[in-house]
Amino acid sequence: AGTGAGAGAGASGGGTSKPFACVAYSQPNGRFIAGGEVGHQPAVVVWNAATGEAMADLRGHRYGVEHVAFSPVNGDWLVSLGSEHDGHVCLWDWSDGVLLAKHHVGGGAGAGPLRSAVFSADGKSFITAGAEHLKCWAITGGGGGGGGASG
Image (cartoon, rainbow, N blue to C red; front, side, top):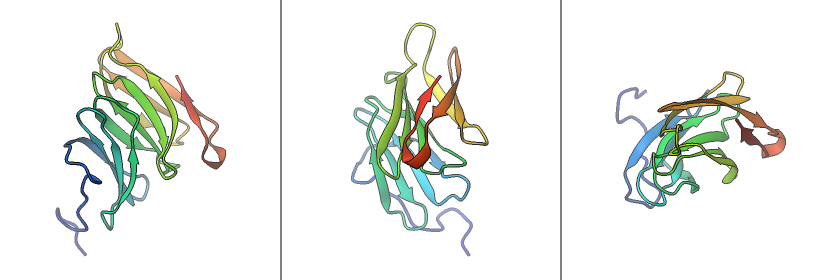
């Protein structure tokens, strides 16, 4: 019945030596962990929290991942925010390895870098935040694994 730090299996970067900038547990059950890498051609890696096994290696950002968040309703959906030099918001169906939507919003005039994202309680939308940026995104579609985001 381990509850302290170090309980459970360790997770590694799924074959990479890149450092991670962010991490999140899946909602609502915490069965999975996602981490976003820094550097050129980074991945969002998803692990099984109990075993440490890498379940997905998602590549859609070019210059680092600033933040990751799981949907509280559909735990297969994950949003990732690119670093200041990347500026992309990505919505994933990580269990199928599918990039559902990708939009460039950071790094431009008036947008500033992206810093965080949070899903609504019903999982039908999420909000992204950053310097001079606060935006609500509606998730469209979604039946049978498909979906997209518009903001």
